[in-house]
Image (cartoon, rainbow, N blue to C red; front, side):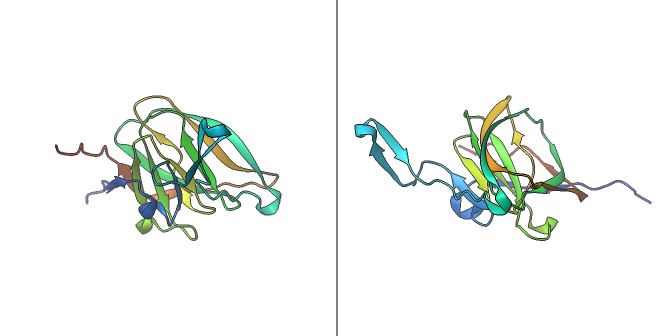
Length: 174
């Protein structure tokens, strides 16, 4: 009897506002509402994400997370969610990273999606959306994080019952 565990592979897709909409916001300048301020010396890219952090007495926190680079293939063995608030990640450099998400509600591994980010975009996970912790590549990478602080715990974690992995995306053909 063969007892080897077969590993399913998640396919990485490009991060776009439309594809990511069920999970939150893509934070990017392309297509964003913007206007000059400070006597025309600064361009303000306005209202890039819907932050939702005040439930149950929460308050916004601004932090920097320093992610260690992952190597391919990347095992996806757990997911987490924040039931009381959104969580935004904005890269403070141009390092590539990936996001793995599933819709809010009861976790369904069949609804997992993986997005490849070139380092010029951020993401804002909506309240309750399942996501994998930071998946940085190439080098140590810093992210500005805006999320919820408060007296109630705001993180649920689950271990996956299935073996999943991300594999390095193929370079586009020229």
